[in-house]
Length: 239
Length: 287
Image (cartoon, rainbow over all chains, first blue to last red; front, top):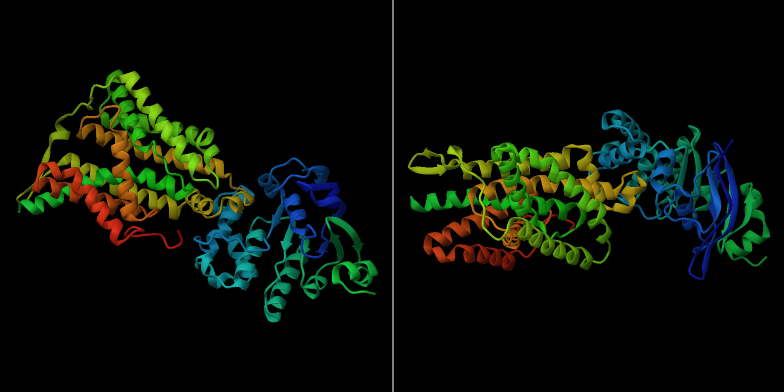
């Protein structure tokens, strides 16, 4: 079953085309990695999928439903969760409250229904000890974990991760990979934009390469990383 | 002893100013909206209570409970359909629109109720007093102050203990991210303004019972409310109560020295606080 399908999706800001006729689909349960140089339009692609911005052309289907014109909020309710490249927690709310907000509103449930789930998520993402700390006081790793936790609290079927491993030490990165693998093992479909390639390839089953808004390759990670075109464009190596 | 009496009267008067200010503080805290029509909305609330009292023969204390849901609805609609459109990066549109709303409200009230000053009907309760030692306290000022404390406690509970309060704080922190979590900022803002107008209705009751009102007194109430909010520190609810008390005490002390100094003394107290603590006495850490 296909979880997400993009068909000829395009988006321009003025004369600049940031998403150029992009088509791909993600089967249910797969972890897809997205790579590409800075400015390739990766985050814009996420914004199109979450509905933060609307596409100019093309269609987006989520679980066989056409969501092209559906609002960001409703897409969240139907099961698309995301983390941000730059962590954006509600700084004045505690870690636990951050999750409660995401869970109650993202799933349309009352607080008493989601309390235990939120504690579970914090347990899994190793943030439980910081539950009552205002999010503004967290370290970078903790903020990234909170991003992940908050996306998880909405119990997404599709989880979008935007450069969640960036800026972490190797040890922190490994800890985060473990958590993401656990989430994936539970059947959550993942699309992950990442520059830290070894982190990405340790989870992703398929890679998509984006450059100047165009898909220039999609396939097995080994195959993609070995392709000449990708090495030239993405890694900047003359071969 | 006269000074103790004066200061206690001032503290109780501060309760009224805190009631004027609490709604303003709430709206500013949630959506950074400065509502210049706040004073006129208080006056409008007083007229609404007066109409209910006159038409239905209700006691003002009953009429206020009838007026609350009406004012909530008005606030909700006002925010949802007008003020939400003015919110954005630019702070000028909300100021201009609420300033215009202030003028429109004043004129509408003038058209509907004439410039004659009005007062809500008083009864035995409104003139009753209690004696504590050698100090005599009016029941009305005590009720006003108690209501102010209740409103502040209630708002704090709402903000920090309930789901809607958490949504208020989340949206105030970052409306874009909140909307990704499934929160509808437009509705959250509308609810906040609705609640602010419920508090405005309570303030209107005490305004109408304690003093005369006419369509033009709104802007002066707005000034008192502003001063209380700013003295307390923007966004701090307990600070707002404290700010109201400072203005109240300054006014009664000023009036005790010379009756002409009452209003001036309140403004002077505000200026002094602004000079010494420009961000107010209890500013929020991140604003």
